Length: 115
Ligand code: 5GP
Ligand code: ZN
Image (tube, rainbow, N blue to C red; front, side, top):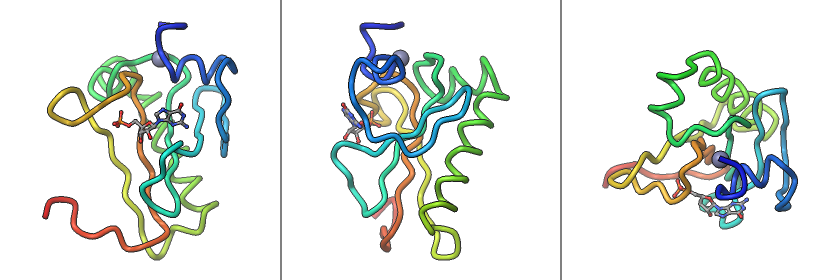
C-alpha cells in the first residue's frame, strides 16, 4: 500500500508516532486523539485493510496483533481492572483508516459498548 496509507507511513517512519511496543511484525502507538486514559493502536506492519482481511489472509499475524495488545495491556497496568479491544471495520463499523488496527482502551470505566 505504502505512501497512500497513513499507517504504512508510520511503519516506514515517514510520520512520527509515540510507539509503545514494536515486534518484528507489529507496531503499537498512542492514538493521536485518545478516547480513554490509555488509547493505543496496534497494527500489523504489513498492510491489510481490515480485521476480516487480516484474519482470513494471515491468521497467525492476527494472533500476533492480539498478543501485542495483551502485552501492552499488561505493561499499562490494565489487567485486573479490564480494558476494551476493538476493531472498527469498514463503513458500517466506522473505520476511518483502512489499515487494520486494534484500539486498546482502558485506564477508566468505559461504560457499556452499546447504550
Ligand atoms: P478508526 O476510526 O479508523 O477505527 O480509528 C482511527 C484512529 O486513528 C482514530 O482514533 C484517530 O484518532 C487515529 N489517528 C488518526 N490519524 C492519526 C495519526 O496521524 N497518528 C495517530 N497516532 N493516530 C491517528
Ligand atoms: Zn497501510
